[in-house]
Length: 262
Image (cartoon, rainbow, N blue to C red):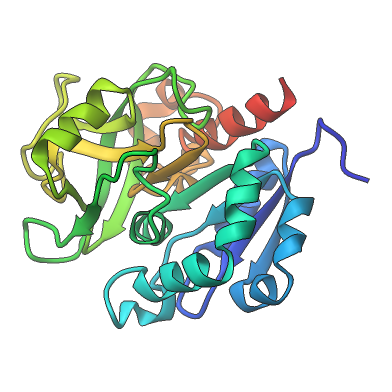
């Protein structure tokens, strides 16, 4: 029997996703109880979502990104699980999208979210190529339980379409003013940056992670599940104890679980 102290997490996989096992392991390490489900199973049993407190869409290349990154999975969610997702969110459930999962959340309309339409997308990187590197992220805590920390963190990125854009540039400014851009790419001086490679895709306002107005739906392009141990950092031998006892990515998972237990 699940208790408040042990939130249940569903990690949704589809053909082409490739980070579901690492993501489930990260939730378990943070103190959750994770299960990996194929999207087809959930489409057949949408009410099963009521058994969980957290829904996670992991990274990878769902359906091969054949019609654009995340587009096919986003269509499945919007058409087959729209009511279940609204019910899940309304009762306080948390939704996390990582990399391809972030692309899915944007393309099915769950992000940026809110009552006023704010068309957004994740476009091709300014570099014109797939980027795989480590980046520094600056948090803006206060709105989302996924970002409850205030110190910069390092995480790896691996994507070809990660440039967050809104149809109306002023809408992006409004999102920032509302605190919905909760993670930004940072430079060596600790400031948000548009400069490559610290900003690996050219996202306006250095946006790396965005939440909806409630803070309970959160998407980010970096991969927190790939840095849950200090040994995962490429400079762990040089940074040593400065990295802390665990990988920075666990902060994202621990924050969400702590909010549910509060």
